[in-house]
Length: 610
Ligand code: X8Z
Ligand code: ZN
Image 1 (cartoon, rainbow, N blue to C red):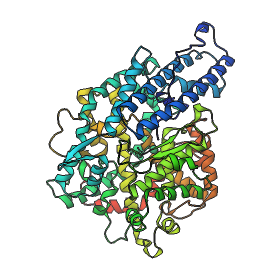
Image 2: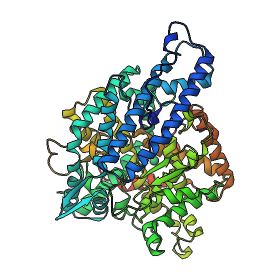
Image 3: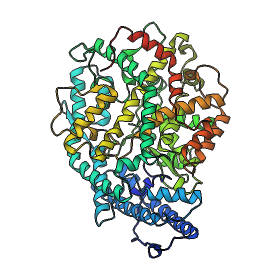
Image 4: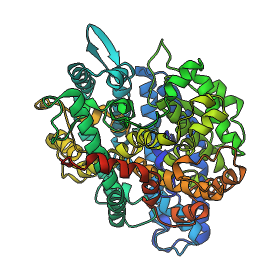
């Protein structure tokens, strides 16, 4: 999701909305006496109005820049960003003046949200907001326009990703993997400057560093959140370890001991994905023998000759089958669904809400394959959530927590079962996988979802250590690989990385400045949502066979949770839909239970771990 939203816990959008007014400091002169509830109310109403006006203006600038990256649009986006950062800082400081006012809980929640500032807060000193916004815009544009030379061609991320997905030539994979990472050394200096600036901003807001500010966005103490993430990882780690062991054995079998030794961490370029974050593209190497076939959605889309827009229409019709309104005409007129040939765009998929009402859009350089078919559902999930909470106050127009926002569309995509594909005419009934195909279908899913979990966790473990100063700039890259090995059991190809390497910068969310823990949480939450939805639907079989397609009752209940936005602490929203107040990995374990037995059996004579 594009960072255009405000959250109760973090006014993230203020990084991205503009304000041309000088600080008004309405209430600064009454600092000696405790401000009244009425003054607080008026302050919040005025803040809301300023945010709404400026975000309407800034979001259009960001949209144009992301759809047409040039010197000029970068500079406009940086100007808007600077003004937004200033507004955010001013409102955060003004909100502090109400610390001693005893406020009704709703006003206190809004005030606390304002006091958290944004995820990338600018300090209050002259020029800081401008420097920060310029750096952030440049980092994102450097990533968005990244290209490198390969075999006498200049290729971009999309082309490089296709090679990583399909090539089984270890030397080619290594070259392309290393090639993409030549785009990021240039970012390192700016990145470390940005870290210093936002840390200063976070300290002014009362946090030790920016990592602590981010961890404070979950309706619980930041230290508790660290434990919570560890607890969830502990629940699912045994499944990851089995998947890792089985995948490594298959890679050893394919590439031999020299390329992939049987006991070492996995070489990151062999996993079918540029960052080794999801491994579905090498499913063919791990496909269970003596079991039925899985379902190749890429092949189905190609056989039916579907284009990108038609793929989005299928995604939309899943949501309408649950009772949601169709997407507005403006969605179809204004979204970017295919990569334009004649200009630079930020290709990383995103969902936008330009007027906080109905002007919802996606921006995606969609490829006709199964991976992007799922990503379409992911992005539409953001849009449907945005539209569901459009009547909330601007302070609450965001997910219950950021993991919720990332989980909505993914939860829907878990219902893309073979039976569903038959219902919508994509799969011929005679091609339905047989009863013995469960473990194949689950393996396909696990290579995406289970493989992702430690990556989802490690990205912000890295950023937390960067913000806290535990990793200094000279340790940025070694720290990254320390965590890649610790959590994912991966290593880079080649003997060493170049001295100037900045491999984190070759992953969108680092230069794109998007917190990442949300995706780890979403990978837990989507299975929790799926289980609850299947219970509401009265489904009685195994979780992985359940599809909630066409179930209006599930749609209604899901919408009730989404309508809340962030108006209540996230456990309230979770409870509204699932009946529990805790994030919990047991649904994902239940979903993959048959696969766990299969993996344990496959691995029984192997030495797992790294
Ligand atoms: O960035 C995304 C979405 C946009 S919010 C496409 N995702 C993460 C990634 O690509 O790294 C979805 C899964 C993880
Ligand atoms: Zn997303």
